[in-house]
Amino acid sequence: MPQCHLRRFSNAEFLKSISSANLIALLQPHRECLAARGFQIQHESGHELDYDALVEILVSPDAAVPRELMDCLYYVHEMSSPETMIALLDEMPPGLVSFPPGADPTPADVAAQLWIKDRALLECKHSEQFLVRPKSFISYRGARGSVETSPFITPQAISRIERRIDDWNEAHKRGRGCRVFVHRRDSEVWCLVRRPDPLRREGALENGRSSGVYYHPEKFDSVIYNPAIDGLQVSSGPKGQHQLYREVFGEHLFGDTGYFAVGGCYTLDPIRERGEAVLDSSAVPGIQWIRLTQAEVFQGNGLTTRYSHTDLFAALGDQMATILASGFFTKATFAVKFVDCKTPRSISVWQSSRASYTRDDDRLLVESWMQVQGILMKPAEVGDEEAEAALAGI
Image (cartoon, rainbow, N blue to C red):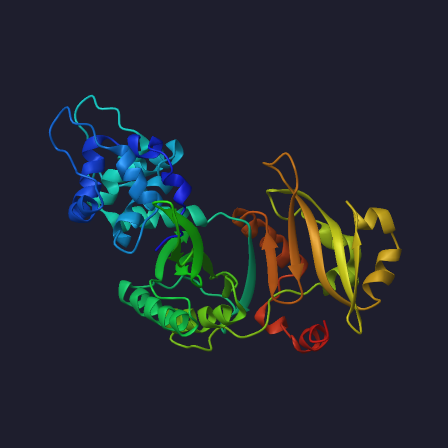
């Protein structure tokens, strides 16, 4: 079940944004349960729904309130913004939802009708909201180096992936209910994994008495396959999940759990060896300039020194070469000025397998620059023994 945000139902404003007919259609499958809690669905014209009674039930749901009802209202609420309504109307199949001639539906009405007609489609469109979020990625390299055509993931493979992830989550006390949504963006395959986090309890008041609400918070992980570099990039929580996704998607994309090798794709050696010249982005249309703003150097014995400035090379000049050679260069942060953005955005690269972006959409342009300058390595260039040995002491 999605994370239960009780404040969404603390007043009738959201519920009244759904027309009576659509709200009744949403509630109808749960008529008996709601009646047992004191809420009657009125069909007769002129009888307004008792919104206060419904709010009281939703604010303090107990085990008798169906999870399906809470899921329904969660997704309808999440997809009820004006911007989302436009996207839904543009992208859903023609005629899937319908309104009386001259009707002026609210965003909540559109989301409610889509839930009624095609719940899976609404959930899929909801997952797309998580495609563009600030993320940190762990990268794995594939065995081929590049692939001409992105592999296709069949519905049967998606079901097998979901079962495998569910088994891992259940074994690690995170519950079941994983869903995998596959999206294609340009040449890449984006898989959004919706999964439960460990059980959480929140205190609640029911009829003046203290009680508890238990639920598994909803989390989204991103698993992205880029055929141009034959690389898998994973944004998720615990380390064990990174390894799980590496194996599962290797098996179902290429038939080999070991297809994506442990070890990263990034090296900061070009910055140490060639200095400021590496920041040249003239070969990448879309990037105006790049500056190094932070460098972390591991000195040994648990000591890491961090250097920060709006432009480190401008501030320190020739000293930068000495600084970067004084230990193991573990992390670099850059300010990247895109041509279509007024202010620069920050990206960070850790040697040798991790990068973070302010926006997912920044990743492809930045990776093009990193490929040109050698920061993003080809498979034959990757060698992580030195990095692993150095980082083991951090």
